[in-house]
Amino acid sequence: MSEVETPRAAAVAPLAGRSFGVGRSLRHARKVLPEHARAHNRSLVLQTLFHQGAMSRADLARETGLTRVTISDLVAELIIDGYVIERGTREAAGPGKPAILVDLDRDGHRIVGLDLSGSERFLGAILTLDGEIVARHDVPVPADSADILSVVTALARTLVGDAHAPVLGIGVGSPGVVNDRGVVLTAPNFGWTGVDLEGVLHAELGLPVLVANDANAAVLAEYTFGGADDDVLLVRVGRGVGSGLLTGGQPLRGSRFAAGEIGHVTVGTDGGPVCVCGKVGCLEAWLSAPSLAARLSEPGVDRDAVLRDAGARLGIALAPIVGALDLSEIILSGPDALLEGPLAQATALTLRTRTLAEFHDGVQVRMTEQGEDIVLRGAAVMVLSGQLGVS
Image 1 (cartoon, one colour):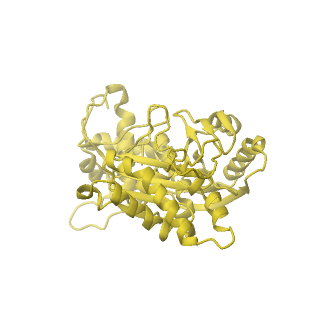
Image 2 (tube, one colour):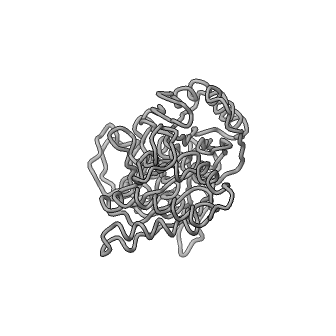
Image 3 (cartoon, helix red, strand yellow):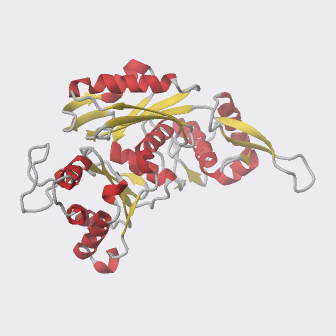
């Protein structure tokens, strides 16, 4: 393929293994540089098959706007590379040779996902390219933060050894602020500053590694597998509190990679508990799973009152974000027993009273349906996008 084609829709090709792709809807046509054309078109074919399933080469040409010759060439290459397989023929509806169907080889590779956001255990999983979890491992969070790196590396090594198929890559959702090279700039709950988690795991395991903040990973899973809107904020409650943002279906990371770091926003002038960061009254000190559990365990406590108070403080933190970005949906991810019911209701009520009713009364606040797997599946989306340009 010597010419540069202009397909009707375009997926973002992996850029140095770090692009997060474009989600469900393929991006409108744009100019593609000649040196990027082939990688771009490979990603477009894989993205189309990922979301639409098995189809003929002619179908692929129609869906992507690429020529049949280009599609034939790309499919042959992707079959050799082990990413696409032929799935037999379509039942013929008329005369002529039945079309051979091709599809993403969803079981041909595995993805390793790690979720380091839990307060008690680190979770790990082996996933198919479809985000289906086929095996799980977990380990206790070490009491000494100096042991965390070795424990995480050992968990990743165990998962790779149990994959029983070529591993496409390792995705990690970590607490804290993570830059675009997988360095954890700060994670107060781990006592980490400038920890090159991606570099450590890559050096130890020799596989592609992608590391992101756990909430940023979770919102990708909600978008790719959970049907979230293009403009959405996901609040992740676990050992700490953070959020992941999508605007126009694209992750919002911020100039210092700290977009969504709402855990250390002060949510009242009435004092409150001391946060791990040293400030008083941070949202995380009210809303993290350990903080809520501790308050609910106090003798004679009014459970609903505690949860409503935490939900109201979350609403206070989110109202300016909803107003500024015109978000349509807030998704909560964390322990159902803590977040569902009074807490979510108080969050929604506070949002409505602190934003412009004409536009934001309809903002939905809901729980994710993906449960504790959301960060693991988000880690899989990171690898799919980084390695194949698929999301």
